[in-house]
Length: 455
Image 1 (cartoon, rainbow, N blue to C red):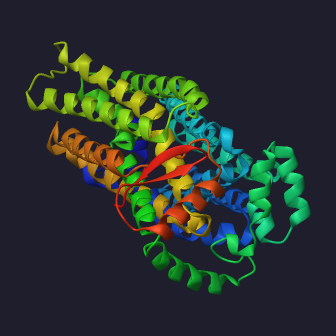
Image 2 (image 1 turned 120 degrees about the vertical axis):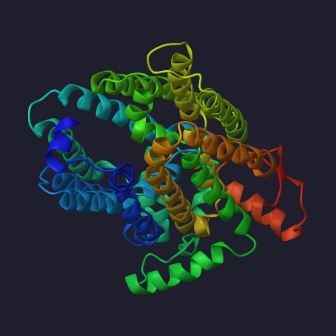
C-alpha cells in the first residue's frame, strides 16, 4: 500500500522478503517447544496462550512508528503462531472420531481460507483510506480476532487422550461421551496410560525440555525414523510448492502479469482467495471419501503442471503486460494452482503426517514437522521477491521441481490411513516393524491391505 511506504519508506526486494518472512523466524523456534508445552499444560491452553501472544504482536504492528518496531511485532506474532498452529491440528485429530477425523480436522483449513479471503478484501477496502489507517486497520482487526480466539478456547474441551495421561479419567469419559466416539475406539482409548504421551505431563518444564531433546533424537531413530523424516519432508514440500509465495505476493504476481494498478491486483488476489475458500468447503466434506495418497498424487501432479506452464510462458517471452492471451493464461493458472493445492495438499499432507506418527512421538513429531514447514515457508517468503526481481520464470521452475519430487516420493512412500483410529494405525505399524524391516511388504488394518515402504 502507498500509505505503508509513506510511513516506513521504500525498501529493496531483499528487505521486502525479510519483513514478510520475519514472522517465521520465531515461529520455527517456538513450534519446536509446542509439543513440550502441549503435553505439560494441555492442548487448549497452549492454543489460547499462542493466540494471546499473536494478538499482542498484531497490536504492536498496528501502533508501529518505525520499521524495527513493526518487525518486532511480527516476531512476537510468529512466536504465538508457532505455539498454537501445530497444536490445533493435534487437538482436533485427537478429538475427532476416526470415521470423521479427516473432515473435522480439515475444518481448520476452511477457517484459514476464510481468513485469507477476509484479509485480502479488508485490504482492498481500506487501501484508499487516507493516512496510515489504511494499513493499520487490517492489523487492528487481526489483533481483535486473535484475542477473541484466545478467549473462545475456554469453550473447547481438552483432548481425552491428554486427560487420560493426566489420570483424569472421569473428565476423559465425560469428554468422550460428548464427542460421539464409537465404543471400539473408546476401548482403545481407555487402554492407554500415562506412557501414552511422549512426555509425562507432570514433569518439570526444564526436565521436559531435556527430555524433548532426547525425544527429538529418538524420533530420528528406528523404528520411527522413516515416519518422522517423511512427515517433515512433506510439510516442508507444502511450502516449496509455492503456495505461500502466491499468497504472500499475489499482488506482485498479478501486477507482473499485467494487472498494474494496486486496486486491480488486490482485487484479483482477493478473488483467488475466495476461489480457494469455495473449493475448500466441499473438499473438506469429501476428504474422508478418498485416500490421503490419492489426493496427494493428484494434487502434486496438477500443481506441478500449472507452475511449469506459467514458468514456461515467461521463459519463452510470451507474457506481455499490455497485450496477448498468455498473460490471461498466467492469471488463470495461478487461480487453478491455488484451487488444486487447496483441495489436495492443503488438506491431505498435514492430516497424513499426524495420522502416521506414533502416539509416543505425536506431539514432538508434529512440532518437528511444523518447524520444517515454517523453515521452508521462511525460505519461500524471503527469496520469492528476489526471485521475481531477477527472473520472471525462475521461481516457477523451482516450485515445479520441488512439487514434482515430492509427488514421486508420495507415490513410493505413502501408505493409506483414512478411516482407521490412531491407535489401530499405530498398532499395525508396530506389529509390522516388529516382524521385519524389509521393504515393500504388506500389512493390514481392518481388512484393508497397505504397502509399507521405508524411506
